[in-house]
Length: 123
Length: 108
Image (cartoon, rainbow over all chains, first blue to last red; front, side, top):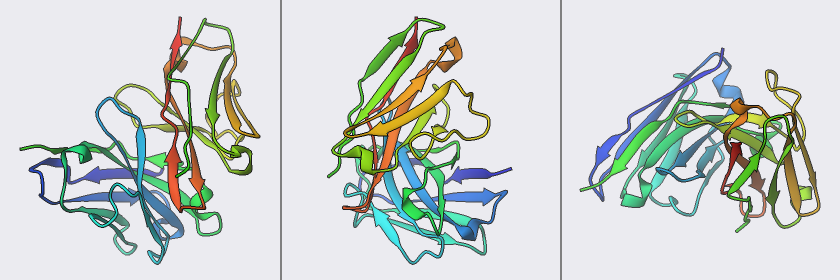
């Protein structure tokens, strides 16, 4: 069965950095787009970033562009989010989610989600 | 940027029909997906491509999309349907994912 397991969250000071990881299993990871989506405490869902199956195409939300970097290692079935220059407003649960296959790409739904990892940015 | 507008809350009695709307400029031209999120849990896809249901989602869940409004309809509502519901599209003009603000469904 499809499993997505996030790790790497924690408490970090404003201006600091953190790297999130998402370990995927139960499907051919290299065939699918992947995404990071976050949810601030008590708030709604916010799409953060998307990476194509090969890693050649990447998109970011305006709120994180220039500070966050999404990447993937298809040999390790892993998705990453490098977060730099963190701000208090980046505090959220970060979810890894599976998107579509190459043929359907970004219009596909997020059909599987991990349980999330909490990132807290505070001094 | 593209904006999706959902009512903050919808209340319905058990056994009745709940309709949750998602408004957006010409949303009928986009593919809309709906997610259910219960407290402390990750979101779950309940409707994709406007009206398709993933396996395991009850037939009571249905969707439609036309003009400027997409609608998630839950028939014969049960207590277990109480959750937050989010609509989502991909905005190809800006190459960004967009979620609605979410609707809290309360079963009276």
